[in-house]
Image 1: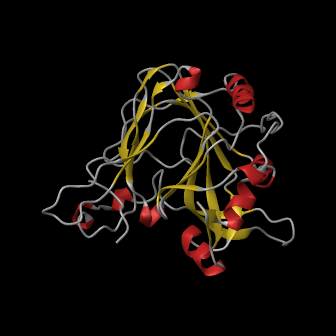
Image 2: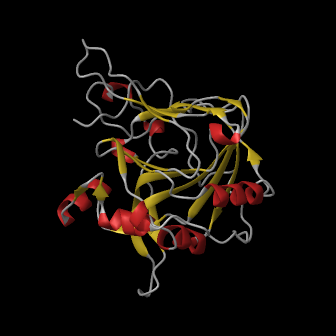
Length: 280
């Protein structure tokens, strides 16, 4: 069984489509330049088949440009007191449906080639292996774009949703489904079809714009693995350290692992969030 969670005492915040979603014209995002050539980038497994990174996906100068731009957006602070069953998340966020920017982030960078090529580390994958890894035929990125800013003292507590681990299945309840890290059914825009394509999200994409190099301390994304059995201790957590310009991909939905965004102790943690979409 793949690792999914350590425990389910804390659950995720409400889904991105809830009340804090802004409804306004899409911002004029800065151009995605300069970028590292695709030939100099690769998917690096942090946890095989579950957590992947792309170091230097964005350059430091592009990240700096975006932090300046994003700072001027009308961010909304999440409620400090979550609903029953939801994890505590304290941050500032901006959210908008923007298929044009999602497409730019997908095909205007190395992401599309890296995902569709799916060479993980030094190992090329067959077409069947790619579909198994991504959860189906990849279409692109979710048009639901989310911007997160974590300032000093802010964090995202342990959370995991829609999970079927035999060790924790008895802890599930109806309100654990449909939250922030659940797989979501979406309509994917299509330039060639008369109507949008039925799709679902399978992987979370997090793009880190800050790190200790920019004065941000703390804020690591930490993943917790299930113990091999009820009598054995859980393996050490997998920690994704912040790196400027690094993209992090991790499975969500039925394969979601319990994870958290640790408290930021100095500076600011800036993240651009979307999801990988596959055909339903």
